[in-house]
Length: 122
Image 1 (cartoon, helix red, strand yellow):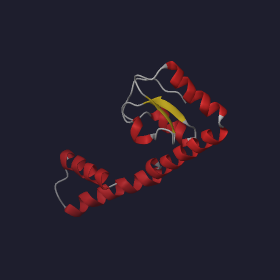
Image 2 (spheres, rainbow, N blue to C red; image 1 turned 45 degrees about the vertical axis):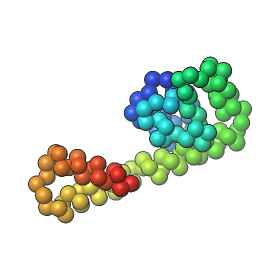
Image 3 (cartoon, rainbow, N blue to C red; image 1 turned 135 degrees about the vertical axis):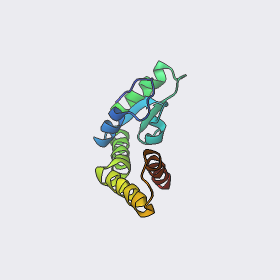
Image 4 (cartoon, helix red, strand yellow; image 1 turned 135 degrees about the horizontal axis):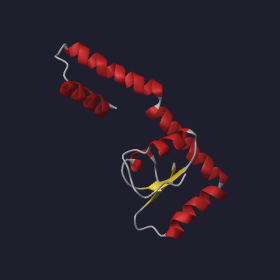
């Protein structure tokens, strides 16, 4: 997958390709560096990278089957470990249990605080 240089939070398209076990070539913007390790799950393109550098990343993944498969495997594992339905369900359950156990008045603000605290723990 080759993604546009305009970064966004964490791209759903990138997550979907990773879940399919595909390597990614994408901009080093937004949340992308948090999910793609340069050289491990694909390649992160810098603003100053030339067209030749970007093309070399793509060509390497086309020509080097072992690298392509390794990047894809790394990406699939990362998605399973961090974005699976099971993991996200457990995280929500911990947040709910945390809020319930405090027997505090549940407001939007303290629910968001509890979610943020759980995210930091992970």
